[in-house]
Length: 472
Image 1 (cartoon, rainbow, N blue to C red):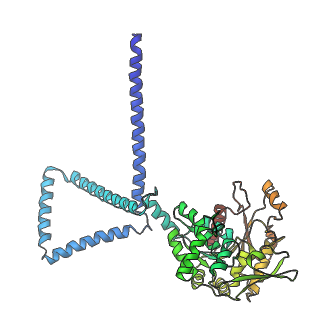
Image 2 (image 1 turned 180 degrees about the vertical axis):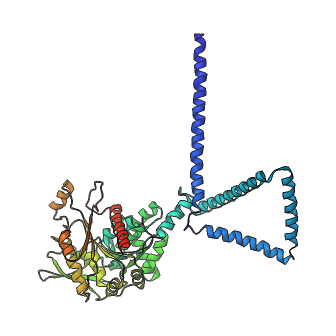
Image 3 (image 1 turned 90 degrees about the vertical axis):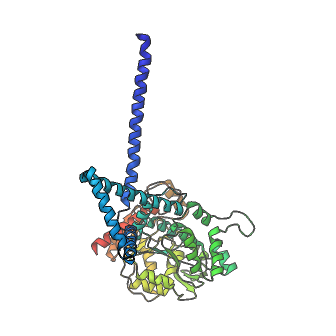
């Protein structure tokens, strides 16, 4: 008997393994069915703008057949009714109605779901053949974003692009109004040699709001590291400059680039004028150019531009008029934020708007530009800029600032190079009439630089907006 035991045990093991494999196969089949069922049901969700057109198509087909029958003096209808009555009577003679009715209904529903599934599958393959994203999931996400608030983000530099990366998770109704006063780096060279407005900050915002392939966005941000005349330039800057030369203005070039990158929202220059910044310093010196102002040897007292009172784009005015939320910052105070407030029409539109206006303060001071300024100092500079345009009423009454930063080697590194945390005296600001919110805006993951984290920043902003909507 013993010599027979191993084969018997092997057969049992094989049967067990076969049963286990069959069990896992059934579970796998079931789990594969449920996502397909969920996606099929997802087409019934409101806001996708699909069901109404399916029903409209079906109703149109019915009307077409009815019209053809009327044209033929109703003979086809009589004939179809007679034949249908004969078929139903014949079936009911052999099969009870309690079985035939449900069977035919299930068969019809099955064919309907199969047809729609195959149709939408074919559409997805035609539109996005190389992507794993399911079409219905993409439509649901798009529908949710389309219902998001109209957000105006004003600024420039890396601060604005960081903000936009986070905000596009909550809304596709975003308008970025970007300063065009940059005169350094690749943008400055293109501005001097081609006579175009500086494209650098606009390029960063387009890339931040892009929902296209990451490779295409990387191409737009690619910076040449060698090559005579190309070194230091980014592909996106050259692309925007070439389009500006072809179309005649930067606004049209941005629209074309937005279509290429499938931008979620819109990016607008603060003005179409060729703006050059100047600043008066505390020591009486006057310096010109955005790149020079960022390295001012003395505290900045006053900021201005040439030409004075540049005009705003009509689209920017319209966007502000329809805004649900207006944001200023984060970004370099004198070279990214205040230049936008040198456009009187923008300031007037912000003043008229009933939307809440939130100032997002920087995490750290910038040596040569905001040395020693706390949150209150940043706000005083903004109010002084607005006062120079005759604005007596406070515009940005809400403030979002960073919680106190914990000691760290990275903080020591910044302190050694002349930067320090932008301190927030919440009680003092509230006594002045500001409403102050503090949050951890640099994120929880360790980074090589002190910068706003897009997710943490956008989450804090959306919490503020939702709370404001509940209270208003």
